Length: 64
Picture 1 (cartoon, rainbow, N blue to C red):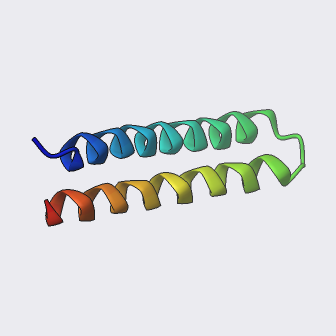
Picture 2: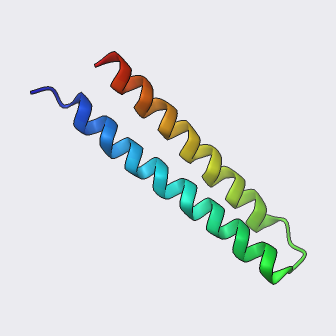
């Protein structure tokens, strides 16, 4: 059995976690209205990382 499907699944899970954490950071920051942009930048990086990991997992699954 190839490790590609298992690896793609693990990458997909990490991507989902990064997306959820990024969106939670964004929502919590919006509700607190601290005026600081650093949490929004962090949330953007987390969401972009999550999307990238999901795309990587999809491509890996497609090739396998």
